[in-house]
Amino acid sequence: MRALVYHGPGQTSWDTVPDPVIEDPTDAILRVDTTTICGTDLHILSGELPEVKPGTVLGHEAVGEVLEVGREVHSIRPGEHVIVSSVSACGHCQFCRDNMYGQCRSGGGWILGNLINGTQAEFVRVPFADYSTHRQPGALALQDAVLLAEVLPTAYEVGVRNAHVAPGDTVVVVGAGPIGLAAVITARIYSPRRIIAVDLSSPRLEAATRLGADSAELPGRLIADLAEGPGADVAIEAAGDPDSFILCTRVVRPGGHIANIGMHGKPAMLHLEALWRKNVTISTGQVDTSSTPWLLDLVTSGRLQISQLVTHTFGLDRIADAYEVFSQGTHSGALKVVLHRE
Image 1 (cartoon, rainbow, N blue to C red):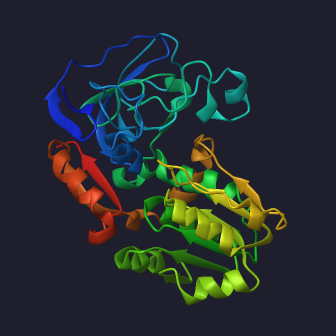
Image 2 (tube, rainbow, N blue to C red):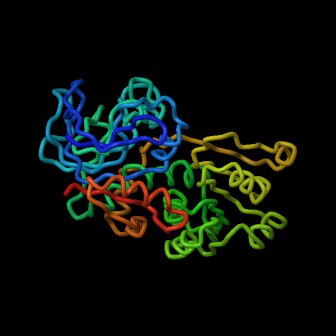
């Protein structure tokens, strides 16, 4: 098969590699119909995740057709089309029983495109297939379905749910990339008073307004007024940048909540000298994808409109072009870049 292979920081190639095979009885083999690129893939290419070894096929989001299943897979069967969760869950360890699949201690967690070969390929082996796939509703477009693999549950679980967004809240989302915009979309489920998106990219601020933000601006007067006045009930850090995290600590009100979604490749300063008396809660997290079935219901029923998160589509064999476009997203306005099997 053909696949995008990581060869070390800054180095990938579209190579011919062996087809995946069943290795464990809980595995499934899928033909990849749709995959996408995540900001984490860019962190890998920048050398920030040394646990990803050269020779690994990248990618951890996909929708595809089941071709083969191991003898202990019971919930899916060949011929069905499924969403592949970015997080694999054994379903039996203590963390999985607590719906904390990202912390699985029995070989799961974030392993696709990290510790094992991933989804940016023609075929993929999916471990723990019973707990790590979701049937794709026939009416759901592929490019919408693939957003349920990671981006939507990440924004909801690590941002909106962890921060306990509630009716009447003022919510500030710092970082209007795909995850931040998905946080804007899912925060609206809880009827906040207003959602303010902050970013340095004008195209992304325009996208935030289209997707439901009440205000979208560069860090400026509105944010300064919040910081000097009542403050935000919730500040969601979705950029993975130390300055963005500091902005969240300044804008949140006493008793408010900072939910950090962004992946930080370098240290972020925690100014306890300014925060110790504010009674602020700070949460972090690895997505678990435990919310995927619920979010899938909301999307298929029309309560969540997510199609505008996808701005570019490519054939799978043009993955190098897709990476180029995605990596320039702050300037080009690219959000989710989706790749389809030709």
